[in-house]
Amino acid sequence: MRPLDGITVITLEHAIAAPFCTRQLADLGARVIKVERPGVGDFARAYDQRARGLASHFVWTNRSKESLTLDVKHEQAQAILGKLLEGADVLVQNLAPGAAARLGLSYEALRERFPRLIVCNISGYGSDGPYRDKKAYDLLIQSEAGFLSITGTADEMAKAGCSIADISAGMYAYSNILAALIQRGRTGQGCEIDVSMLECMAEWMNYPLYYSMDGASPPPRAGAAHATIYPYGPFPVGDGRIVMLGLQNEREWGLFCAKVLLQPELATDPRFNSNSARNASRDALRAIINETFASLSAEQLIERLDAAQIANAHVNTMHDIWDHPQLKARNRWAEVDSPAGPLPALVPPGVPNTWSARMDPIPALGANTQAILAELGYEDKDIAALREQMAI
Image (cartoon, rainbow, N blue to C red; front, top):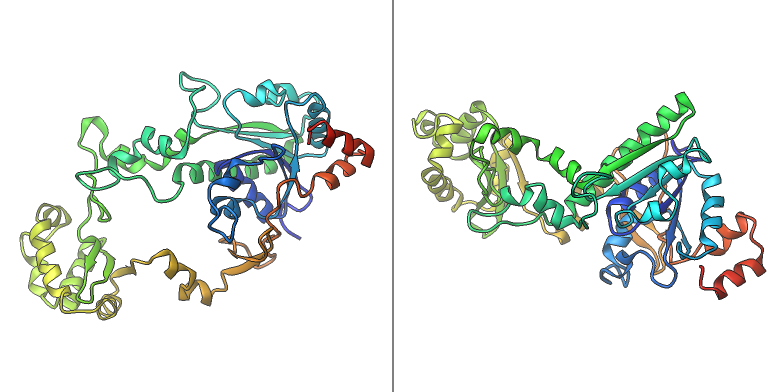
């Protein structure tokens, strides 16, 4: 038995934040019914065709769901949504600002009829405040939350390479829904959850916020290197590859000098004998490190770093991750079915040893419409009529 077996989630979702939240609920056993626009569906379906003809974002965030096509603005949509919600535990939506309320799907409109329903709204800026009605996409929130101001090089800002603002919002929505289900088990009452992408990213920005409080200078953009700890970042080696390494304290600095650089006297050199000093003398220290590393291959350097217990990592590409020996050794890859046939999928992190994560197919658009409507009591002729009216 999975933790959320028997829990039903209705979701009006698109892009990444809400789909990532609900896919994780499905991983735990929840039945997730994804309501999509007829003929088009979640616009993330059309982002690209890189996953054997399917969109990479969609494949990632939509396995183990059922797809119901429904024109939510159609005159018969309210009746269908009402029937769906009668058997639902959670409603998730990340529609455009105000759209859910106009459809009668706000918590206020639903709470009397469905007192046990948990309603989770995901938006860019939250349900009130001067930014409430602004559109919000991942990169825009990275910018608004200050993430871009500390990410990149001294000359140019850079966004995160994955949808970090969407991911943060999806994770907070997911964890708060789990908490709300626990609370409902105690009180019998549902609740409203208001997840703002800006607030999620601002939470993740707390270290640079505190670092620069009271008008202090913020962490500088330092590329792939750490902005305030040195040496901590990428270093070239003699075979043309890059090795990432990181030191956290003075004990590790001493080991690094003695066992990696083979220059123990550097540990007490006044230019480098504290993290603040090393930060101030980055150029001089980088030259010494680069000179030593130039005679080593990546594997030779990693061997020295491991022997000295200095944290390190390969700078892997996406192709490297597909074949990562640690992921293979821990059996982190599974297969899920899809409209394009079986696809590899990472097993969700942290699943206990008492149950297995749900790894069901990625649905084709509208794949479950007929079955879901029949389950709600609609006969074949009724469903055919809804199709003819382009309601589904």
